[in-house]
Length: 343
Image 1 (spheres, one colour):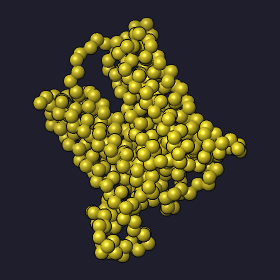
Image 2: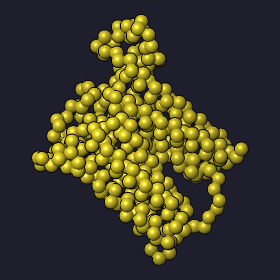
Image 3: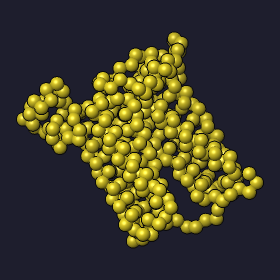
Image 4: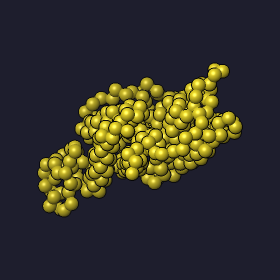
């Protein structure tokens, strides 16, 4: 098998596994199992969460101030096992990139390999801090955002190294390149607002839609308190510590961001879909439109149905896939276009 195809296949497997890890991480969060194991990387001093009543008793003696809930401990450890497997796969991917000369000499691989390795190292540290700093919101938020970044890079590893037929370069004006770059930035910011909402347990702070509490009262946005990234260290943030008014500010900011991003991506996708000059990007424009429809539906359903676990996980996964789609579009435009002579 061609060496580049080996890298591509390994990256695709890593991409699928990374989405699974993200999903288990979100599920762990939703069932309040983020501190199911009070230590790291083991669980109550062991590499395997307690299985028997005797093991549970011994574990409780080691951490007498942390009540053991077996299902939460195992939920957390399943997530860690999956994340550990992903980490080993990424290490293997990077080693093969450096081992295969034809892969190593490629400019994209030269840049992406050390970047994904650095992100992986930081992600491991964030995973540890998530537990040791007791779900500190800025750490939890970074943990999820880095996970999304790893997923994007793994997908680009796959996309770049797979065999694809050569095609002519497309004339792309600078305005389109800048528009897609802005879309990437906007989605990343919106994803931050989403994970910040989750890490501060603000998802259910507003019972109404589209207005908070069905518009029964006017919400005064308390943005300074809502986005204080320098939260005190040492507090247990499990369940959140902010007032409901501040959580409502976070939730409504997330909704406003969603509205802005949805409108922008909708217009961008229509541009790609109906401008005949960019028919090469029409399919990905269609995908963005479909993902937007699904994501908006999931976001509204989260509010109306009080955050069902399946819908909440899907909301996070679709947000990630939407980010991947726009990043892929930007990659295609930057690598498959030639200089636009008139701009």
